[in-house]
Amino acid sequence: MSKQVKADLMLLIVTLCWGVSYLLMAVCLKEIGPLTLNAYRFLIAFFAAMLLAFPKLRHVNKPTLQYSALIGATLVLVYIGATYGVMYTSLSNAGFLCALTVVITPILTFILKKEAPGKKLILVLILCLIGIGLMTLDGNFKPALGDILCIMGAFAYAVDLILADKAVHHEEVQAFQLGVYQLGFTGAYMLVLSVVLETPVLPGSPGVWAAMLFLAIFCTGVAFIVQVVAQQYTSATHVGVIFALEPVFAAIAAFFFAGERLLPRGYWGAALMLVGIFIMEVDFKKFFAEKESSEKFSLEEDKK
Image (cartoon, rainbow, N blue to C red; front, side):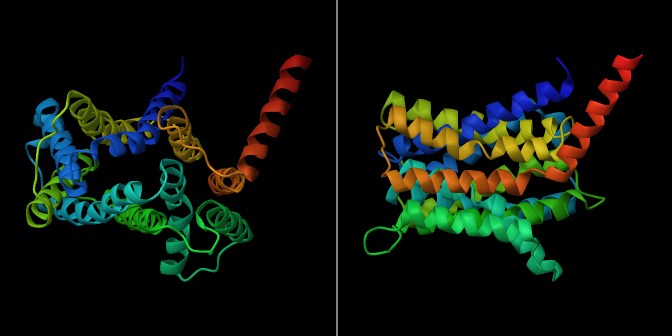
């Protein structure tokens, strides 16, 4: 098995964990407040990473900490949007709407660089807007509060990705340390908010403990670290397509474990959004060029 295949499988497992995370959040929110849950989730992930990789994290410079603090602040908005969104919309809607980051990120990049959007991006935007409407608008053409919160979370995560991209290209920033310390800052911010706005409590049942620990260790700590490591051995196209499967996994988990059923138009909307995400992430020109090159190589080998 090649390194790229192994990396793709690792990213697929990460995506599966993120897809299931919406269901696990819903389980935890029965006993714990949203801010408290996120505080536990990120702090447990941070301290687990510190224990496992302390030698690599012991010496950290100022720029890395500064970017970690800034990115951690954006992650607070991301996870407030996602967690509160799960409380006020369906798990399937939450998964698909949070995945809009894939579309929002290039839009923000176009705006910041003062570039007009290409035909492909316009097509994707139309597909996603129609999809969102089919999934979220009720008979009065009003989206649920949770849908709006999830879209806000997706927007915040797009900002987070742009900041992270700028950070990792800074010559003094160490990417692995950035990935870990952003967890610590996010957890600390969430803890302060939970103390001020909620009454922090520990889970009261084994099931919620298990769900919270899985969220913290696998969906947060391991996921962030594996993503950084795996991306060294695979292409950006592969990563984008694999991550586009997150809302699919979220919908499957909601269907089988939470008994959620969307209206027929909701499934059509989800399908349109998924098509849009794939179109956004796949470089078709490069794909067909590589395929054509491979076929020519095979024909030449056959002639020999």
